[in-house]
Length: 213
Image 1 (tube, rainbow, N blue to C red):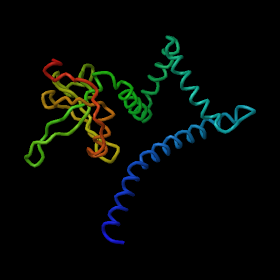
Image 2: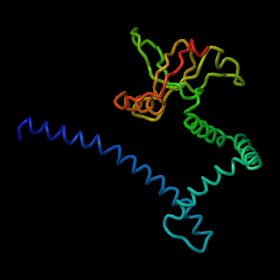
Image 3: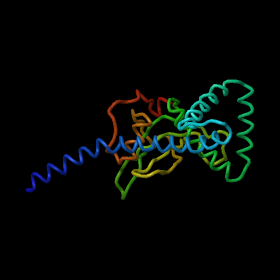
Image 4: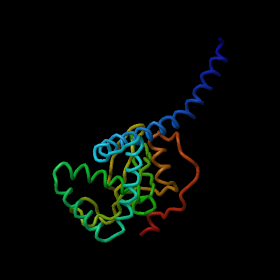
């Protein structure tokens, strides 16, 4: 096989891999989560109820989550839930894990809120050369937090890492960032894939730091 044919085979295979791999990974994660819910909830159901069929645990888990969402609209249920949260926040180690997961879920659920949905470019210097790092504003108000954590003109920005789960949260002056017309989902895909994956559709105009002030 000559080099041209080998190049064609390699390019075609890579193109197919790029198209298929995200679908496979997505389906795998969905199946893994569904299997986990079925295993945990289904095990309890089979022990508590006289009947059980495959998939019942997953159905009950989805239904239970939906019911909880409805019940939280009631003042009494919300008060009991908040009481349970306060108890969890007093237990060592548990409060750290629970608080971190709660904050992460809250961050993504508030993607339409300007407090936690502004994508920015952070201005830095690398080896003396001006550079920019993509980030997401996670906090603009430090009221109620320890003194010295953030000044009135400072914001907290999350800087995700490429090709791994992790990142840094930096507190810096507002004038050290530039707003970007991009949604959180687009920004995270852009950062995690090292800039190789992003759609062209914007989220809409974002006020500049001067306009926000």
